[in-house]
Image (cartoon, rainbow, N blue to C red; front, side, top):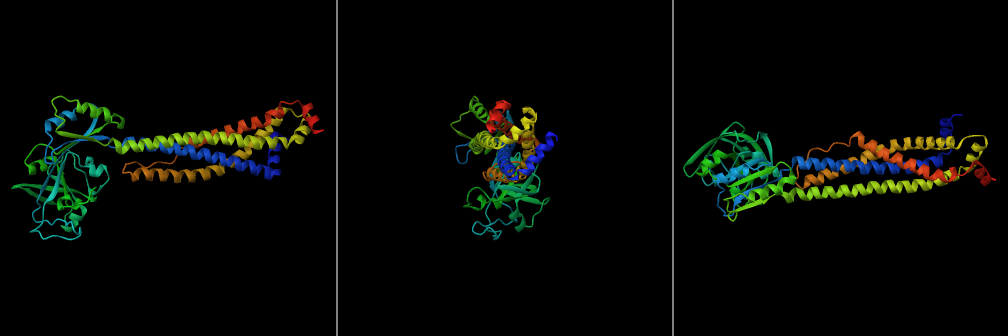
Length: 411
C-alpha cells in the first residue's frame, strides 16, 4: 500500500478527527484570506484616493468684494508641481426673459418682472470648481467647460426645466448694461453646501460660464478666486509654502486655504486600518499555529499504537512523517475550498463597506476591484506554512525517539 493510499484511508476512517482538524484549518485559512484581502482593499483605496483626490489650495481676497490680481495668480500657476489650476470670476447678473427659482419653494416660478439676479461663476475648468470636486454638483448632460471654450455655460437642471432650456440653446446674460450671449453646453444637478438666503445663493440659479464671459459681465479682468492643484497629495504643503514665499505679494490682503484636512484624515484612517490588519494577520497566523499544534500533538499521541506497528514492520520514520503530511495536505485542500468561498464573501462585504465609508466623506474613489489571485495564493501560502510548522511541532517529540523507545512506551 502506498503512502498516499494509507493517508487517504486514515483520513476517511477517522472522520471525526479529520473533521475537527478541517474546521480549525478552515478557520485559519478564512482569517488569513480575510485579513490579506482587506489589506489589499485598503492599498487600492489609498491609491485611488491619492490618484483622484484634488489636493490643492485657493487664493482669495480677505475683503468681501476684493479681487485677486491676475499677475499674482499667474505667478503661482508657474510654480513647479502645480498639476492644474482654475481661475474664477464671480458676479451676479440678470437673465432677461427667464424665470429664476424662488427661495421659498424651489419648484415655484417667479414673475419675470420681479425676478432677481442669478449667480454667475466664470471658470477656466468647470470640473475643478469646488462644487464638483466636493461632489455637491453632478454633471447630468453635456460636457464640462474648458479653458478653450468661448461664450458657453452650464445651468442647473431645475432652472433648465422651468425655462425649457436644453443643451445647444442660447442664453442672454446682462449686468449694468453689459450683455453676453452664451450657448448652454451642459446641465448639472445638486445642491449647494450651505442653505440659500437669496435667489443668487441657490444652486438652481447658478450659472457657470467660461472665465472671459464672467469677466466681461463684471467689467474686470481680475479674479475672485484662484485654485491650484498639486501633482501628489504629499506635495501640497511644500507647494503652499512656496506660494507664500513669492516676493512682492502682500499675503496680509489674501487668504490661502488648502484642502489637506479633507483627504489627510482619510489617508490616516486607511493607514491605521492597514496597521491593524497587519497585526491581525500576524495574530491569526500565530494563534492558528498554537491551536493547530496543540490539536496535532493529541492527534499524534493518539496514533502511537499505529506508529509502533508501522515501525515494527520496518516502515521508516520519514515515511511515517510523509504519510502524516499527506493526510494534512488532503484535509488542508478540502479546507481551502470552504475557506475560499467564505473568505471571498466576507472580504467582499468588508471592502464594499470600507469603500462606501470613504465615499461618504465626499472623497472620490474609483471602484475597488476584487483582490487578485495572488492575494489568495499568499493567504494559502501562509496557511500551509502554519500547517507545516504545526505538524513539525507536533511530530518532533515523537519522531526524536528511537523505534525501540516508542515500542517500549506501547508495552
